[in-house]
Amino acid sequence: MNFKELVAGSRTRRVFDESRPVGVQTLAGLVDLARLTPSGRNLQPLKYVVVADEALCARIFPLLGWAGYFKDWPGPGPGQRPTGYIVVLLDRDIADSPGCDHGIAAQTIMLGAADMGLGGCIIGTVNRGKLADILGLADSFEVLLVLALGVPAEEVVVETLPPDGKIEYWRGTDGRHHVPKRSLDELIVGRHPGGASGS
Image (cartoon, rainbow, N blue to C red; front, side):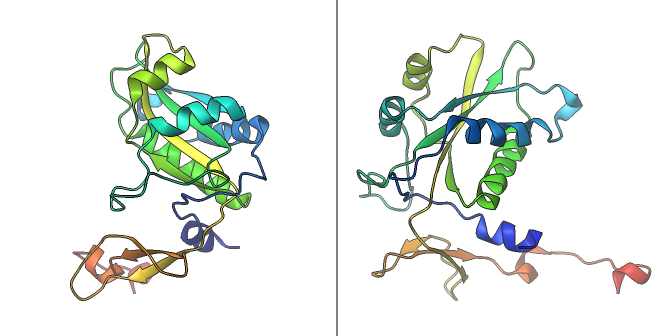
């Protein structure tokens, strides 16, 4: 697939096939992609914990918020949960803030996962204190994000934003997950063409 197809296919996935686990080396390989990304002032303040252990994954799962618009959905059920996690940390001995580094790293990891046939969810709603305790993290590490990963077991469809402008994602009776997206014309609020490349 070309790069646009890869981006379009790298949707948020919340339902997985637990019978096909992700190995810790695969997770480490995804972190290696993030290692190569740009970093503000090249400080590289991000550190990572990769988790593929089944028992530890089970302890991490209830510490995560899964879908803000699905108020009554506690997340994927048994057999449909992630089989790997990448915990993105800020090393405060290096920097006081991650800037935008963690966003760049997380999206790079998700693109790498999609390229491998995996799927995932970037989760910011995390019980950070309990997660730090479970992982035995030093006080110098701040939990920024948790990336939940696995073999996807749901179809995600990108939709045109409806006339009422509702941005909430929704799940159909067929189990497909629908995600409305704003149009390109709505996003670009100025065009200043110039030269041959601007035509």
